[in-house]
Image (cartoon, rainbow, N blue to C red; front, side, top):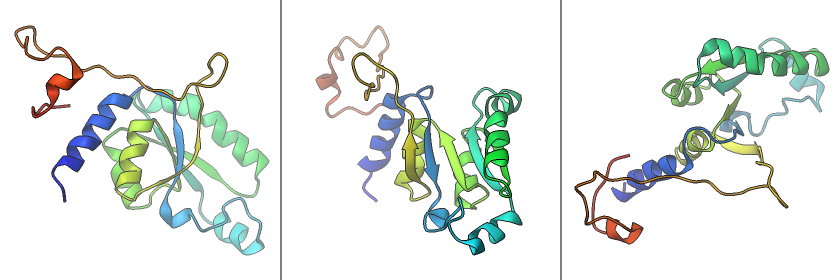
Length: 166
């Protein structure tokens, strides 16, 4: 693999940050299945196992359940007889949950989603847009900073040919 690719992924994760709005992703194994149930066979198969929605729990399990529990309740009521359950995951647990297909859907921020998509673990199906005036925002921000004694790096172009850590 090209050595620059992991650096680009890390840079992308830093630039998008870890606090932006979530993207909903579907795992590749679920992409061709009908979870909502246009076909009776799909509903019957899904009734035996709950649809697991992985959510980024960067503020802890309890807060994730408090924030996302009502979503599962709504889906359980609205799409009965299907059963939905929330699976809070920290940053380190998400790749393994996606790789082992312990979750059917993932709701996480863009940096987490980008990583999953790059490695073929997820496909985006929806994103949350940030309200803006006059249109929704489609930008992200990031910061690159240096030690005060690095006066040779002042502009973005000064990074050319240099290595840095995210």
